[in-house]
Every structure is written in C-alpha cells, then in structure tokens.
Image (cartoon, rainbow, N blue to C red; front, top):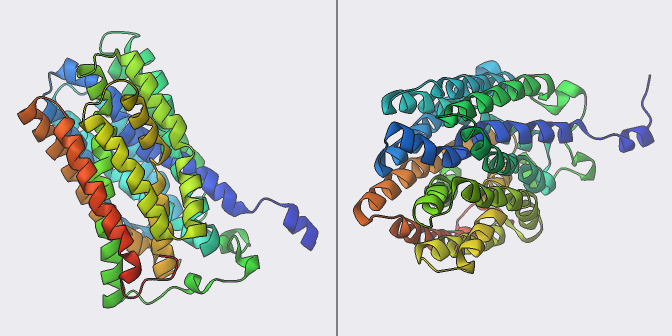
Length: 414
C-alpha cells in the first residue's frame, strides 16, 4: 500500500533509531569498556598491588588494542559490513571484560584489556562512520553529538554503581567487571537487531536529504592533498586523545589518594562528569553545525584547558568542582565535531576511511597520555605535572584549530 506524504512526515526517520542504537554502542564499547576503568583502578590497584606506572600501563594496553582495530576495521567492514562488525566487536568487549574479573596478575589483565581495546575500536569507528551514511551535512554534528553521550551515561552509571558493587564483597571490583561485561553482551545483541548499513536497506533516504544535498555530501577525492588536510585534523585529534585520557583515567585516583575522598565520594564526582557530559555532544555538535567546526573546536579546547589547570595547580575548594564541571560539559564534544568535520571534507562514502585515519592518530595520543602521566606521577609523587602538561597541549590544540581555515582544501565550515 502506498504511503502518503503526510504519513511519511509524521514518522520518525529510521536514522534516529540508528542514533539511539549508536548511543548504546558507545555506552558499551567506550563508556563501559574504557571509562569505567577510572572507577575500578583504585580497588584493582590495591588488590593487585599495582604502581602508578602499572596502572597507566593497563590503560595504555587498551589503547594499543584500540589502535590495532582502527588500522584493521576498514578492511573488516568491507567484508562484514558495519552492522556485523559492530555486533561482533561488542561481543569481544563483553567477553574480555568478564574474563578480567577472573584475572590474578598484571599480565593477564593487560592482555585481556588489550582485547577490550580491539573490540572498542572495531565498534566505535564504523558506528561513527554510519552517521555520515545516514545523515546530511547540516545534521551530522547534532547526530554525532547524541551518539557520543553514550559515554556520559556510562560514566554516570559507573560512578554510582561501581562503588556499591565493590563494597558487596572482598575484591568486589571483580563483580563489577562481570556485570559490566554482561551489559555489553546485551547491547551487542540489540545493535545486531537495530543497525543497518545504509538507508537503502530500509527503503529510505539520508536524514535531511529532503532539504537538498549539500555540496559537502558529495565529498572530495581522498587523494594526496586531501590526505594532508585530514592528517592536519588528525594532529588536533591527537591532542584530544593525549589529554582527555589523562583526566578520565586518573582523576578518581587523584580524588582518593591526593584529596583524601572516599571511593563513594569520588564516585559521586565522577557521576557528575557523566551527568554534565550528556549535554556535551549535542550542544557543541550543534554549535559546530551553526558556527563552524573551527569555532566549536576552539571553544571546547579552551574549556578543557581550564579543567586541567584547575587540578594541575592544586587550587583549593571550589576549583576542584569547577574542574569537574569544565571537563564534563565538553567531555565528548571533540569526537562529534571531528566526525562532522571529516564528513564535510571527504563525503559520506569516504568518512570511515578518513575517520579511521584520524582515529589512528588519536589512538597514539591515548597510548602516550596515560603512560607519560603515570611516569610523571612516579617521579613527582602526584599527577599535578601531568595535568599541567595536558593544559599546555590543549592550548596547542586551540592554535591548530585556529589555523584550520588556512589549510588548503578545507571547506568553509572549517
């Protein structure tokens, strides 16, 4: 039976179901698979007798796995398709997290958390790439912004739930890994049920296509000049990877060991990061749609600089609350803006390849960040120098973002 035009207008476009499933995917692969580690590290470190540098090494292993996945997921997606790859990757995340709950040594934890990183990367990159396939340019920042808030929901949950689980029995952190792994398993099944590789699979067009195809949706050839522009974007993304992961990995440890808060109070702080971060992707993704990617990046990096300085300078009282607020309100803004920027540059059919390239560079930053922060903490006795280094790096990112418009081949929205 033919569907009238008015009925079509009243329907929710299937693309927004892709966004909902994508939010859960990011909740699982990044939120639980990575950012919950910050809440688990104090108890794990105490139980397994880990040093600061060993705690940083665990996080670094995750990013090595993530980096490997980014290199390989383009080829795997061409074979399996985004839907199957995302679902299988989430299954790997689930299995490895459950197995960490049985681990008794640093080596076993490191190997398993590397597998978690592989699954995280293999789920995240194709999931973000689907946005450029399903959404027109003028809606990409907003759609990507709603997807990345999945990490915020995970932080909120881990900050409130993990301290309770940890207190239920000796070595309660193991129970936390079991439960988090089972949640990821359920989400992998849901993603298989909902996700589709392209709008044509559901007999619909790209979301926003009814307003006309923006010239940026056609994309430009991904050749040597274009690759240079994408690499420049990758340099900006590197700084974000290097800096945010220092905060996400070690802020709870700082709250517990340097400020003397209990794990429950530190968890409440971390939960507030999660609550505030729910606004970060949609607000700043939409801001970049309206004012341009360059402006969005500069504003976000400015706020992040403040977050890192407020902790690194060891300012008393309200400064710690302000730092948590600054970090939370922009926590997942950069990925949504970078995805939209790359989609503008290369078009929907090349986005996975280009986003994979800048995510590879981003992954190098994530590897170096926690490792260097751990070494600095070993040398100085706390993480203040590491946070000051993060602040200096985000100032550099502001300068790189300011020069985006000067890069040859960049679109006007940059």
